[in-house]
Image (cartoon, rainbow, N blue to C red):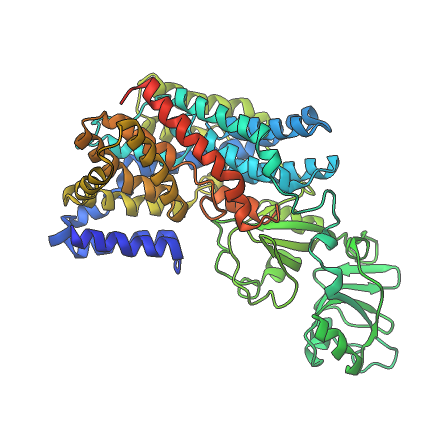
Length: 601
């Protein structure tokens, strides 16, 4: 038990501090469990059993099915209908967002749902003069709550089903709609809260319809320099010219007469009277006065009109400003703009970086990127189109519309309905129907063979595979029973319903620190043993754990969808707790009483 506890403690610390990605920690857990087999009881075969677990394979296939739905534009279509229905009504806007994201997340992984909905919501906010800060937290929360409608709503549900199917627990997996009644109650309660109470708590961090240059405070860090006729820099490339001057400058736009060029201007040769819009710090503006070959041209301010360029026949390409969000599960996390050669790779110039309420305008190239960071970029239509199809980022404005296979939408929905229906009727397990559904997506042409794995979040797959043997070790060494015994000793005098509610709250708080999948692996064995010691129904305690693991509402780092809206909403860290804490308490009461009424304790 002590050895397993030590592994758990180290894993928890690494999960919380994240010096390495979560999936790397999960692989380390496997190694530790197997190397210390005499104490952990985990053989090499058990150590890698998570990779062959029905939960892991099912989640993998559900990612594929979600990608198929995404490629048809189903959620985008719902978003368009939502915008048309909402009109200028604040209440309709919020109700539409909550309804679409909540119901969609019951059948499609909520991360792509939120990724698709973010630009829809921001576009809606811009057209109606609403602050996006008033809409994005409800989008994230509703998608989390909607995930509890069905077994396939979240990877956590599927993992929990795999755990409880062991003989040591319930001895059977969850059925497709086993807890749908409770899920509907939770989603309805959360939706009413988001519609009636949350508006009084949600901040306006970003002014409605605020210009992007003002929102990111760009104009104070951009200035113009001209190339005099007798400049020694005439004939040199923009890149070489700025390298030659001893001032920290980055070229953003080249103005040449009536023509303008953006993004890929590093190799353009300078001509007399050229004007460069450059980014520099306030110290750099002062140093510009001493630069030979460039003449500083102070002006009152640079706005969107200076940075959004209309294309022309002389080689100037249309340039637009857009917000681009770093995906929490993407390859850019932990990298820098310099290490990824962002400008050359994507053909986009980064003008500013926002992390929650903080905006960075200088020295961004060496700053490690985090999930949820929002980049203000200047790019042409093709570059924005490439970014829009890249899983590492989310383009937060609807400047580009990906090419969806709308004609395949009925077929894709039919495949998902078949996967859900056959599993619900116990014709085949969800594992089998999900694999068949993923194959059908390719056979039907909804997904190209090369696209089959594009939508898979491999970090989640590896995380699941690494955590499953840890759960086995907690069970087989008696570590879970030991913790449950101490928990019962502390709260055993309370009524069993109060203990159930405390288990829910404790699990929800733990999930704020760990991933929801890690929390469900750690807490199901403990919740089950607590119920046995109290003489209560273990099923009720398992459900409390599963539902609590899907409601990390108190911080932006508690769940991926929170992190995805953190930057675009300009939120402060505490905004999530202000809106989420009352909802968390409300859900603890509703979920606990719902379990008692529906199944008893």
